[in-house]
Amino acid sequence: MSDESERGLYERIYRVVAQVPRGMVATYGDIAAIVGGCDARTVGYALNEIPKRREGDMPWQRIINSQGGISTRGVRQRELLEAEGIAFDARDRVPLARYRWPGPSAEDAAAQGLNALPAADADDGAEQLRLF
DNA sequence: CAGATGACTCCCA
DNA sequence: CTGGGAGCCATCT
Image (cartoon, rainbow, N blue to C red; front, side):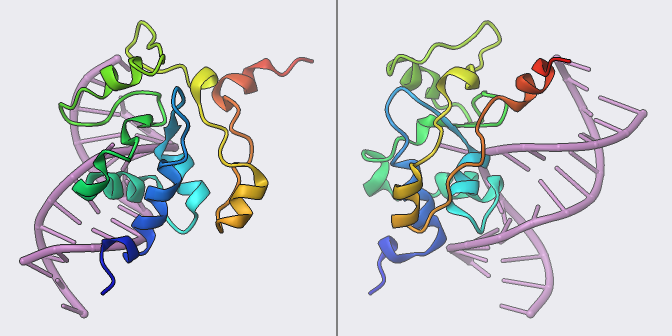
């Protein structure tokens, strides 16, 4: 009983990851915020333990770190993303301001017991934009 | 239950 | 930019 599909938190993480649309990305922190009850690190741990059965269904490659970079060890994650139309910048990073998944709609989030992202704007860039 | 492990993130030098 | 250290959580031995 309780096969891996009933594991708990990780299962919730997988579910959110599976919702990231093709051609977009999400950060570990974003997934953690949406799932709630865990942090970016936990998301990374969960993705590392994806059941083989799910690999074909799990767009794990769309989850990147907060810098828009790839944290996987030796996997060709970049190629998978480029195949979806995601372009990397000269520093080998994904422009989060452009490809970052804004999270599930408030309705979807509520229906699935998830949280909506507060304001997934590029705060590291937007803050510098405040005019006087 | 304690220890080890692992696809993170932030801060400081 | 690089490097080191701390904080955090779930799961397996």
